[in-house]
Image (cartoon, rainbow, N blue to C red; front, side):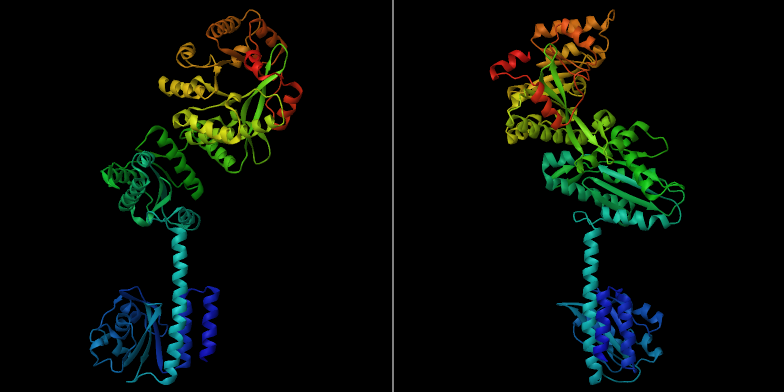
Length: 604
């Protein structure tokens, strides 16, 4: 019978049956083997005992002994857990260890109790008890049964602890101890849709984490994250707070039909406002918060997306404050948010690539170089130009990641073309404001092209006037001077569409200006655009700056530009942007072949 019991319990453990159900089945089977006893199992957390199973005990008795504190005079089970050795009490009424508890047991007819500690390694994790209705101790059979049962309980409890630990690691953030993104997703998917009453989501981003990391080090940054986690927990309850990763936290609030997210968000902002010492440095925590209430016709994922949009809006316009989502909030911002998401996924799935539009001599139609243009392949296989996802470029992180991907692609393609002996002179690469804002443009370029073995003389960096508008002029000028000192040439792109173009020609050293397509389109008889282009050509010639005309679509435009002294151009008249394979064919068939000494002179 003991062997059958052992096999049955081990099978339940192997199947992953709930611990309480397994132990309850064990008690019932033991009571069938030993009819004179009533079995009970309590778990032990190191201080208190908790009822795990006692199917034949009255529920009020089980409730009364649950949460019992272990000690030398805490009945049979409490004493066994405290001392770590079996405790046999043959007379509950007179034994001092039962003095405070006999009033519970005697009315039920129990006169004796034998309790054995359940161990996991050196720890006591529970107790296994036999209650007797006569003054008695264990028989030889009962000792064998208890020995087997204690061992089985130990296995079952040990497995349960391992399962709980795996769940803790799966659903708990190691740094803060808060629930993590996986748990947040689980709550949204499995619990909130069934919740009664109103509910909503707050998303909070730490405003100054990067600054703290860069200034004081990552130990201070980790300490700041912990401080924010503790203060958010204090404001909204630890069970409602989640760390999603990095500097982002989430709070789920529910149960109140009149839930006011603004009050909760202001509580968080207030809780964060006081100074904190982080790894020996005084830091003032701050967070930007976006929130959304669940709509009656919406779902959990939609509410989460709405909170994301609100957070994005807050970061753009209300740093350090709270913004609540409402229908129609920032339509343009919503488009940007979706574009950022789409481009981020495309980057992760390697669907961002470089295409190349030829730059040609207008007189001979020889190809002297390319402009590298970013293209994204959609999940359906369609290749789309950057104009379709330009909203994403306003996100500094995405813009920087796109530039990095393009630099890697272009470096690899140039190296391949040079190794094949193709007559490539240069490739133009567009830089964004985010690239200059990062302050490491020079190092990134030298590293990427150096590792690919591509001389920097083959690179032209293209920057638009808008790159300068959000920066101080001397910062951009210093960066460009440093880049040119490495042998790179710099082109001012879309010339004439920004502000103070002539001023930038004087303050920012550039080698090339690219006349915007809007001027090329006006090269028709009688249009004043001709005089503007003619003026640009004269200024550029006197400053020693080369000119490339963009957007050439007709022979008439090419002819007019040639007459005005423009030597280089690009546009659909010659070729649209093509992939690397077609670009190689174009170089082979139409590339300007020349000696190294002729490159600069003839291309100019």
